[in-house]
Image (cartoon, rainbow, N blue to C red; front, side, top):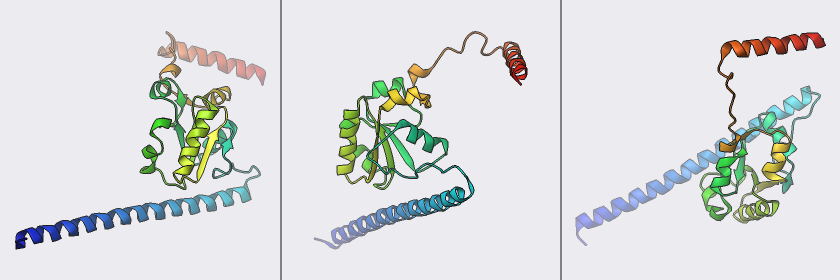
Length: 199
């Protein structure tokens, strides 16, 4: 091996080592930031609970299954730090899904989320059936994800409680008068008059 080849080899080894160190540093920084976020949220929640007569919802997944009411309660309180996964096929996902859910079909788990979600992240998931959801949850737990909960009843139960949804099938025709300002004002005035008559 000549001197140029040896220098190139040493240079490549140095670059690989620097890249590896940078990746480790980024991961460490990410984990530290996540830890600070969790601590800050915990302190804020304790303060709120001390001053509010109504307890806030649980801040983390504490069971392997949760009701749609529990998830909706967390979302209504503006609880950050959770991810909703829809493990159904893309076509069904595009039609209707829980607002904010990420499409991650069972067939591509856990690889699709291992590089994007922390193992301590609260994950709520649902599928076409509770069995499909449970299978997906088991795959994630085996991959090391610690806080995974199946949303009992899935999208069907979510719709029953008027949970926020998105998708092609949720788009409704607003009607011919939807963009007519005068018609909307007239409708508003009528509703207002009805409200006043009830007081």
